Length: 373
Image (cartoon, rainbow, N blue to C red; front, side, top):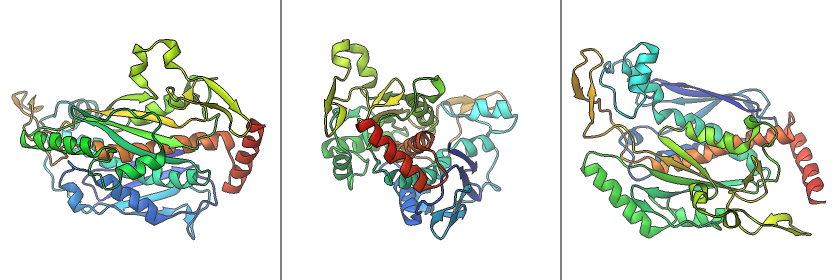
């Protein structure tokens, strides 16, 4: 139902996106959208680029008098660090980056590859995701994230953590972490990597509350919501693994310890007391909180570059270095929220589709009456 396309280069003049499929009648809070862009720029371990850019988008279509019209919505962001025309060609590919494969595939030097493959592109996906969050709020669906690992520092798993808990515990955290003790150790790990000319990866968790039973489908593999969530999170630069619920931990459990027993109450309807499945069974939401985790590898741009090969001379040389972050996991968690929001919004429109927000609300309320009766 929703379609998004982004364009622009990291050091180009603009970043832009078009979102098609958002219904009419949604109130658009541009200040909220821009506040989400500001959240993306924060986090201990970010690089100097964040001091240059003050990310703010303009809406250039699809919104009239602060309401969506049903037409495609245009987002435009002007880069302050616009210098791509003067930047040199690059021929020393970085291990772990799109440099080598991209340059060979598109028959060009590395500069256009690194400019487009850059995580700078995610600024537009956060803008789109912020609008999707506004849509989900109309149905009391809320999203929050937190960092559960940076380097070798991990936060113990808390299955019953609520959205309000996450927001309260991560408030003012430099790494978007719920544990102040772990936060200090994470910052030490980032500092150590910086001193060594190295980088840190990690893992973040996104939780969604208020999701109704029945989003997604088991009838066709492309409609399974867990597959759709995994795809969009794997599209985030540096993400190498996605888990839902207890994820990889389930491999070591017996069936009796891995699944969530089902209960019924007149007021609550069908529910689960545990949430090992992470809110998804058979590719369909089951009414419990949605819990998704993504693992980010260390950033491939190193202060002490690894060995590479000059693509022009074929001589062994150190890989290219560009100004970069030491750790982007806190920012990744914010981006992850937006990516998940777009998938949940798409699934809501698929299930309760209509051309206006009012029509979708009526369909939604009728469905809730059906499943709780």
